[in-house]
Every structure is written in structure tokens, then in C-alpha cells.
Image 1: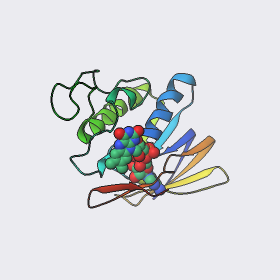
Image 2 (image 1 turned 120 degrees about the vertical axis):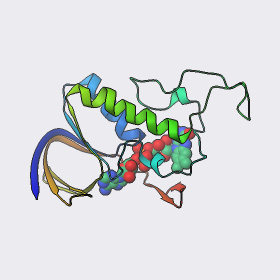
Image 3 (image 1 turned 90 degrees about the vertical axis):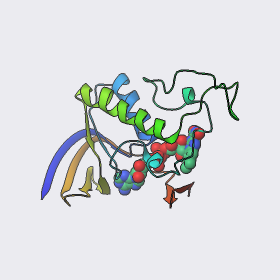
Image 4 (image 1 turned 120 degrees about the horizontal axis):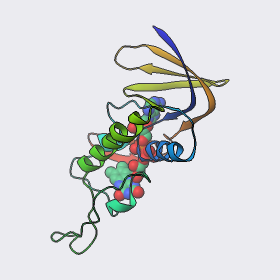
Length: 164
Ligand SMILES: Cc1cc2nc3c(=O)[nH]c(=O)nc-3n(C[C@H](O)[C@H](O)[C@H](O)COP(=O)(O)OP(=O)(O)OC[C@H]3O[C@@H](n4cnc5c(N)ncnc54)[C@H](O)[C@@H]3O)c2cc1C
């Protein structure tokens, strides 16, 4: 089946970059957004990262502008004792899922297509495919296709590296 849609911005990727871009767009414009990702939930490569990985930086400085990650807690034990908390991979994933569910979708300006692969963009028409149904979507993009897959972190058996 083939479906036709129209939007101001098509954002490819629900990792930190696609989520932060969309978050700011909601505050700074009236634009509407279609956001797609080949994963089943937001969070980008954190869906694939090895389970014991945490942020390497304080949670408070990561994520989208509208919604703090963590609570500025100071760790009281372990190697990070005395410093601001570092979110676990699970915390990062649930944070981005919450931003999608509690901010993006209720705004009425964001349409989210998980498990969807961006195929191409030509002459303002982007194409993506739903990986479950095989349905192809054609999107007339009035402003821009925002490709946030630039760093292309790739994960094999849970080990992730950026290849650009
Ligand atoms: C293990 C690990 C720990 C890290 N820790 C930190 C840290 O502490 N602090 C920090 O600042 N950075 C950290 N980084 C760097 C990290 O890359 C960035 O913080 C950020 O998460 C990258 O987000 P992104 O949106 O650029 O990419 P991604 O998270 O990779 O998001 C891109 C998304 O686009 C999807 N995608 C790609 N191609 C397509 C397509 N054709 N169609 C549909 N979807 C597609 C991908 O599947 C992915 O979900 C870490 C990286 C790794 C690997």
C-alpha cells in the first residue's frame, strides 16, 4: 500500500539530535513535524548500546531543552561519588519515550512513525517504509528533511561506535 502525507519538516531519527531539534522547533515555530525512526521506540542508538553503559557526562546536560533529564542528584557512592548523576541507558531510553508521549504527541503537531526506514528524498518528496507492514509512505515536505543520522553509530552485539 502507498500513502501520501504532507508536513513542514520530516525529521529522520529519534536519537538525541532528532528529539532536541523537534523539541526546539515546537517552542520556536508553528511548524508541524513528521518524525520517523527504524527503532520501535525513541532513543536512537541507546536502544542498541550494551546494557551496562551510562552517560559519560552529567544527565542534566543531556537531552532536550524543555525537559530536564535526572534531578541534579549528587551520587553518594561508586566511582562517580560526589559528582552529578550519570543516567543509565535505560533511563535515557525512558526519558526520550516520555518526551515523545507527554510533550511531542499531545502538541498535536508531531506525527511519529516508529519502525520506519527512510528510503529517499527527491524534489521535496521523501519516501519511507514501515518495516512491519511494508507500506510505503510518500511525504511532501514543505520546509526541510532533517537527517539526524549523520554520526551513524553502529552497534554489533551491543557494542556501539560512531563510524563518521
Ligand atoms: C555507548 C555510547 C555512549 C555515549 N555517551 C555519550 C555521552 O555521555 N554524552 C554525549 O554527549 N554523547 C554520548 N555518546 C554520543 C552519542 O552518539 C550522542 O550523544 C547521541 O546520542 C547521538 O544521537 P544522534 O541523534 O546523533 O544519533 P542516534 O542516537 O544514532 O540516532 C539516529 C537514529 O536514526 C536512526 N536511523 C538511521 N538511519 C535511518 C533511516 N534510514 N531511517 C530511519 N531511521 C534511521 C537510527 O537507527 C537511530 O535511531 C555516546 C555514544 C555511544 C555509542
